[in-house]
Amino acid sequence: MTNDQIRAVGAKLLTYRPLPAAARFHKSHARYRWFFGGNRSGKSEANTGYDLCSYVLGVHPWRRVPPKSTVWAVAPTWDMVGAIVWREKVRAYLPPGQVQSIAWHNRGRDIPAVLSLVNGIRIEFKAFEQGRVAFQGRDIAAIYADEQCEHDSESIWQEMQMRLLDSGGFLAWSCTPLISQPWLEERSSDPGPDDEVIYADLNDNRLSRGGYIADDRIDALIAEWPEEVQETRIKGHFAAFLGAVYKAFRRDIHVRNVVLPSDADLYRGIDLGFNNPFVCLWVARYGPDRRWHVYDEHYQARESLAYHAARIKCAHRGHFVATWADHDAQDVHELRLLGIDTLPAKKDVRLGLELVQAKLKIQRDGEPSLTIAPRCVHTIREMMAYRWREGTTSRDPRDEPEKQHDHCPDALRYCLYSVEGDSYFQR
Image 1 (spheres, rainbow, N blue to C red):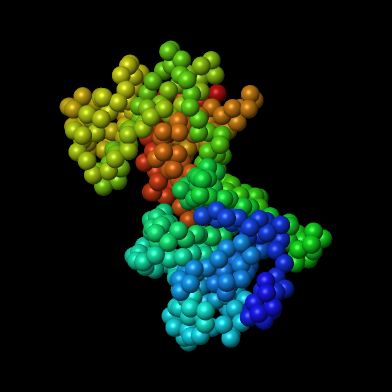
Image 2: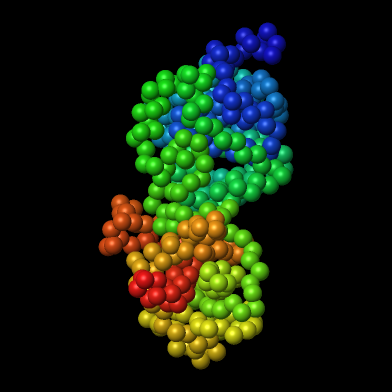
């Protein structure tokens, strides 16, 4: 950094000292930098503080901003844009002399819409709550996002990718992943060639480790958090989400290919729907331990029963012991006329969920009793996103899961509980 550059930036940029994970984040040349971190781990300070502001000022040690370009700074809500991204981060790092003008989203609440800098760079502020349409439009040089998007997140992410394509721009996204979002977890667990995933540990921010927060304050924070979210709030790892029905489900444990023996018992489970997806799962029970494997799926909304029946009949040949479905549904009779005979599934929700939860547990040999083939992408996604209704817990037998992301889990529960429920709960 030259003397002129030193005089051009604010004091916080000059005094900033990155923690270990933040240093790796700044040096990364990946097109998509994913910075997952625990609460108070310094991830936001590194992302929408130092990295964003040093970049737009042209003094970032590892990246160069194109002349006259536009950069987006994004948070979940406009209130968070104003209170966190603007007042806590950007305003603290950008010296006033570098800001040429401000266009306000809400001046009374101190929420900016656009900052124009004297060097010709623009920072445009956005909120995920605006929805997908607000993220359409022209090319953007860089996007800095902080915290998870709860509104149409996958679609907004796709729009942000499009904004970066022609310009060859990059994205930096920091968050503590407390919201169940299978697309984001999949990207973090299996990053592509354009991705780099970095984790920031709250414990690295202890004074005793060279951080900024007193050890006793961090100890007090950790003591307040439920055990099921500590892995996420401390290390930023996707873990068992608060409210998830299947907390034990892990992509790295339960998603795998299985070579089924010739004597495996084959079943199908069907969850009927039209506006909601129609689901058929092909499920095998095999081996001396009678383990379960979901080896294929059919998942489609807004199609006729004739379409679904044709797809099911041509998908897999062989003898199926049974095909289970909800016989309270009106379409079961028509489905039988189309050549798909079904038996009435046992539908006790509480006991069925308990059985599936038991099959997800790791057994003495280190393997679970239920696995899912990688090709069953909808089943995997819904097993991760299936949640209890807000304000309830899984300990109360009166509780029920939310009626969303439940189509594949319902079809799976019909199979397992109809086949094994009586013997399992009479042991």
